Image 1 (tube, rainbow, N blue to C red):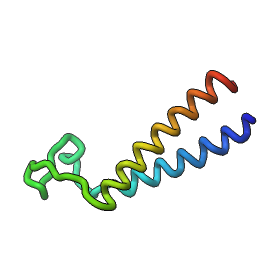
Image 2: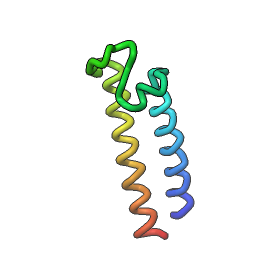
Image 3: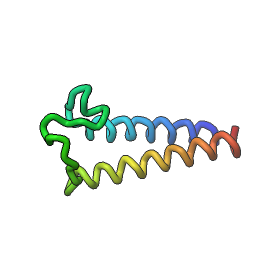
Length: 76
């Protein structure tokens, strides 16, 4: 049972890393603190594939967190 959770955690972590890296826009250091030179400081809504990828990332992170809690308290 422990091995199955470890494998699931590895798969989820790799998928979460890939989803986060696919979201990167290639902005500079200013975009890390909320500024974006290309958008002129305006808020840009997510549409289409970008919105779907964002929702998948949230789902993966919630699944990862739940699996960590289960593995910590109930198995480990």
